[in-house]
Image 1: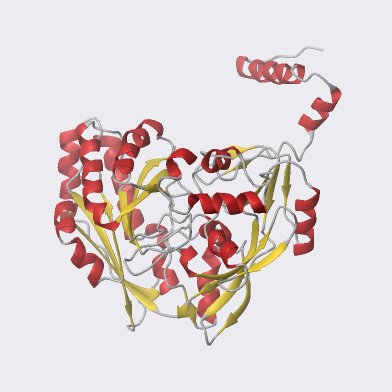
Image 2: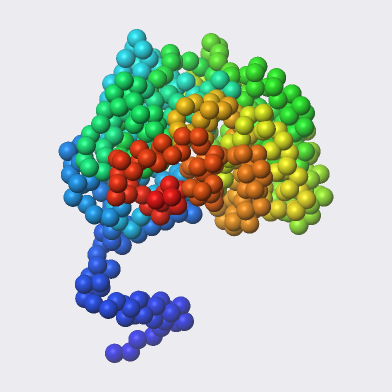
Length: 463
């Protein structure tokens, strides 16, 4: 028999044979060829991945408890994979709560509603609206599951509004020992307060009750203005608008400002979110960088002149429709929250650093405000905060860019977003959180063997 191989095919075959030869026993070879073992997991941006031995999706609470009791090694709950930090990866067991989803109940008098932790947030706004409720605030991305968004203290913007975690009124937690704990302000209050932001380190949260409000509409206004003019009037912008943020255009003097305010006016005609103002703006910036990055002066001139033709239509709709946006361009992200009053100074220093070192980036910097809360590991624990997010297109290396900027956040006593990329470990983190030791002690008591800790969480927790 004659076999003809080109160079590429030869390398593929040789690589496969080499890999097979590396296995020292039939047992190792059988394990490698196991179909379940060979099913990889990857996050939204592609920066995190793993090859877990088991990917399980329990259909009931009893099955979940049995899995935890009978499995060995590390267990990591997984949602929609929208975190950029390595919270999920494990070689052992990935646990999806896909069957723990949907609205489980609601109370019209208190405006509270209970959902399964695996519910996609993209489906929750409509479900709440149908029973006359709405989120008190929302993030601008709704790809996450409810459990994942709460576990990482995901947030929107507004000086009078906290993160999702601050609106949790109750939750159910399954511990490493298989105990099912119902937690709220009166039942297991210490566990409840800690579990509101826990990164899945205390156990598996199966359901959450949210404090909501009556359904409402929002009006969205967007405009381009000079960064310094926006910062000079920052107190006015954040106090006169319910929700205000800006997307700062790097390598320019301008930013896109976004204001959301409640209204009783009728909804405007629906638009294709993928082609709405914010997404078109980012796509335009990408094209300008592609053709202008080699000519910094020309690029700056073009970016500064966006103001003359960048106009945006006002939008009015149900709150959940206006808050969320389609993010069709993939990226990696680092975000820190600094004391609210330090936000402008921190942003200015980051922009000066990017310009001085001509750092390669074109994604806008997101600048938002979040109200203080009391969850021990919340980035907003005990202080009103300004959240500043830097991004890099998924096809571009982010390491040098983020490494240059991260020390600026440290200078301003910044706390990293748990779902975003950062390099801090427990030695640094315990200095940023007054109740760090209390959380660590509670985690140790609930999971003494560290069943829910992967390598990243061990580094964070110092376990």
